[in-house]
Amino acid sequence: MAVKRAVYRAADAAVTLVAVAQTHHLSQAAFDRLKAEYDDLTTRGRIEIARKIETARELGDLSENGDYHAAKEEQGQMEGRIAHLAAMIENAEIVEAPEGSEVVGPGSIVAIVYEDDETPERYLVGSIEERHDDLEVVSLTSPLGEALLGRSVGDEVSYETPTGMKLTVTIVEIER
Image 1 (tube, one colour):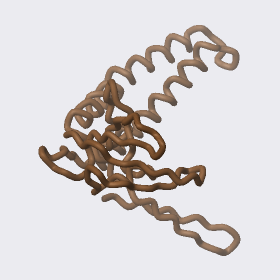
Image 2 (cartoon, one colour):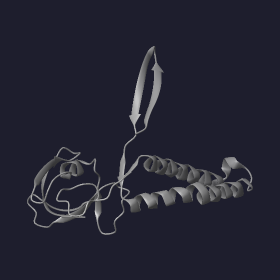
Image 3 (cartoon, helix red, strand yellow):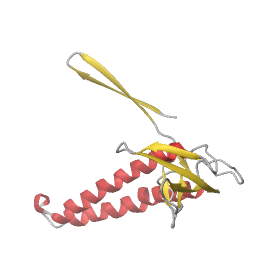
Image 4 (cartoon, rainbow, N blue to C red):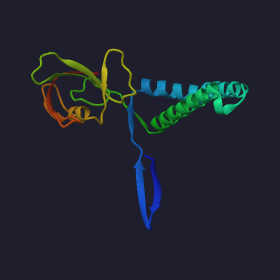
């Protein structure tokens, strides 16, 4: 795990901030998809943006050149996505939900029923980068995700939402 340190000085006092890289739990399929996107953006994407910027420069005065400013904005957004993907890939941990496991873990598909409700809701427990067509993703670090980890079918778990509301759910099914 990478640890990055930065020292800031303010009025004779030194403050050290330590940023610990967050591990991203990803399935192999999600990792491969993110790596392919990273490779595409760092090659084809950068070349395409450079061409757009060059074409816009040829139009003349940059101070009032909307095409130039739009291309530079697009470049900034793409570079932000590249940095985000690079950090995720560097700190990725490939996890596959073990077949037949009876507890919720990364990669589990969980059906839960909220207190005072009868309709089960299904979620994929994992990274927000895990895309699943018919399921919402619950992050491992979200209050619900943390409450579900390590739990089994029939368990009733409570968690506090970011707004301070306390909710209770019952796990009715775990799929892999």
